[in-house]
Amino acid sequence: MNSIKLNGLVAATHTPFNDDGSLALELIAGQAAFLEKEGFKSIFITGSTGESSSLSFEERKLAIQEWSKIAPRHGFTLIVHVGSNCLHEARDLAKFAADCGVDAISALSPSYYKPATVEDLVDCCAFIAAAAPEVPFYYYDIPVLTGVEFSMVDFLKAAESKIPNLAGIKYTNSDLEGYQAALEYAGDRYDLPWGIDEKLIDATKVGATGAVGSTYNFIAPVYLNLLAALEAGDEAEAARLQADAVKCVQALAGVGYLGACKALMGELGAPMGPVRLPLTSQSGTKLEDAMEVVKTIRRQNFQVTA
Image 1 (cartoon, rainbow, N blue to C red):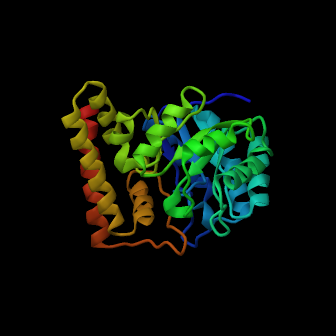
Image 2: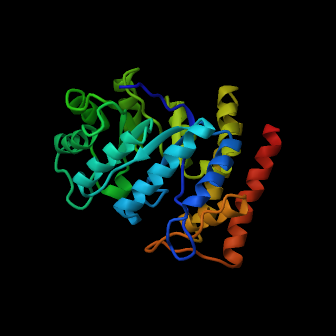
Image 3: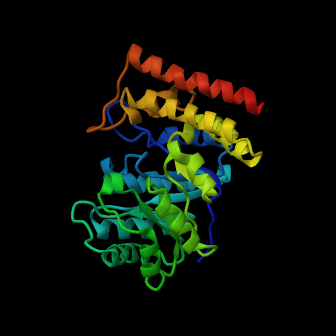
């Protein structure tokens, strides 16, 4: 198995749709070019931001296939989310992704029939990961969406002997104490990229070296300046920048978060189309005002990095 370490910002990408809700794979080339220009080296596709639970099995395969062709042209490390409530589907996607040559796979927990114990969760992950034994596997911990919450230290302990290709955990969980404990247990053996954009400053302070997020797609300069401020020991500036990032999230959340994010990407030159039901897209003055909040903060931070 190839080793992997996700350092810096990793873009959790959107899945582009046409106005009728069908896949718009032809937009991925422009999306990739935009993300490369923003400075990304790694991308995480078909996850929560990518509306994976609203995609069919065949659509997910098509998106994986397209990204696996385009990502190498831009030098991206490609991590693919393959999780599903149907573990056999997740296993098949894992094998398909491996055959496409991706760099890593990830899966969240089944959330309809939930694993009752951490050992059951590990067994679910092991079943998926075994289909791609040469590809690094990340468990995707996101209890706010799955309703499944266990100690990630316990997960790592139980997984060590059952998932030989375990790379680490995509930790999208607001429990910072749990994250710090997992980092300490993981040491150099496992990679634990952080997954909550609004708390990047806190995660970095306890040891995070990589982070996967949706807002990185369009306000990477804010976070890059934040990380630079922390590196320089300027915690006040880092805190100000984190507050700016939170303002962006709040502005977009007020008009339907993912739909607004995709609209904003279009404003920045990387059209993503609408979201799929049950999510909704908005238009009009409120959306324009929310996007202007984000674009203003983005412009200010490009001026800082220039």
